[in-house]
Amino acid sequence: MSASEQIFDFAVIGAGIAGASVGAELAADASIVLLEMESQPGYHTTGRSAAMFAPGYGPQPVRALTRASAAFYNAPPDGFATSPLLSPRDVIMIARSDQMTALDAFHAEISLELPVARIDAGDMCNRHPLLRENYAQAGVLDETGSHIDVHALHQGYLRVFRARGGTLRTNAEALAFVRDSGIWQIETAAGSVRAATIINAAGAWADQLATMAGAETIGLVPKRRTAMTIDAPDGLAVDDLPLVVDIDEDFYMKPDAGRLLISPANEDPMPPCDAQPEELDIAICADRIEKAFDIEVRNIASKWAGLRSFVADKSPVVGYSQQADGFFWLAGQGGYGIQTCPALSRLAAATALGNGIPADILGEGLEPASLLPQRLSEVA
Image 1 (cartoon, rainbow, N blue to C red):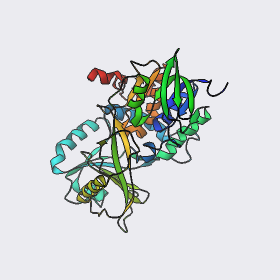
Image 2: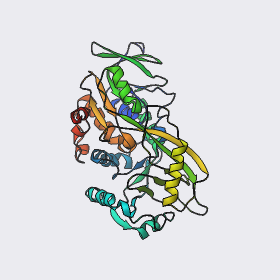
Image 3: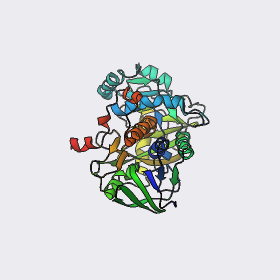
Image 4: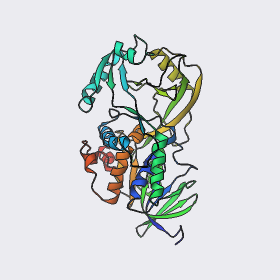
């Protein structure tokens, strides 16, 4: 049978972390083709992520999925990666005196799930010597965080996908969809593909893809985030410093290969595209960082931007379309796609196959209805 005649069980569109991970999970039980519009997987968002494993980060469904991903991160399958996926990294959420209400609310909610601690200004400055002494009044310390080796994670899933017989096609942008007799005919820039089910893991392009297939849209909003690296001050070893995040998420700073990675944590709505950093965002970032830390942002070693795509409640969207038969949503991961992908991919694969959601995921307090696409139309 030729490739054009084969009917795959699933065509996963998008080979970033969402598509690669769900493809790897599904390939254990089904025939899968993974379609990527770029020349390499993970070009737009996955490859630009400075991801942390932060169990206290995100809305409740995201936090539950993150906790359910911990076992995988701490003990991935044999051969998945050649080095640990996680490197311990404390997280400190900091607040000025005018932000204490937000810090109090955050601490009250997160302390029900994690062993976090309130710390004062002196303790914060001891833990991060660049923090200006009179900038922040208090913080919340989370010692359960870790840096994620995003490249190793993504490549590990792609390796598993191929080992299980999955087919990857790059330069294969989806151009048109036709459903006939229970089968999708997908026209791509690399030729036609046929599959019983489409998994929409197209990131910022997910709503556009849905429109092409006659499915409902979910109000997905791609938002640009800018980041850059700067040199650390002479004589300061930064590798063991914590990630510091403003409680209102107006900026963050973390170590990155001997340098400091900084961001204004901006969320600028824009159409799906190859996002690039803008000079205004860089200037805003420099101003916020210099106000909070005793450092001058002058020589920028590197700068980039990526798109983080959200729906209204900022939780992922996972489940079958209510309008288009054989069309499955895996979108809206926002800035949480890396830290949640081990659990989210298992949940998505189980749902797509019609199996029960894994008990360990439910055991973390996840309510499956909180991820279904119909919740968005119900709210509207």
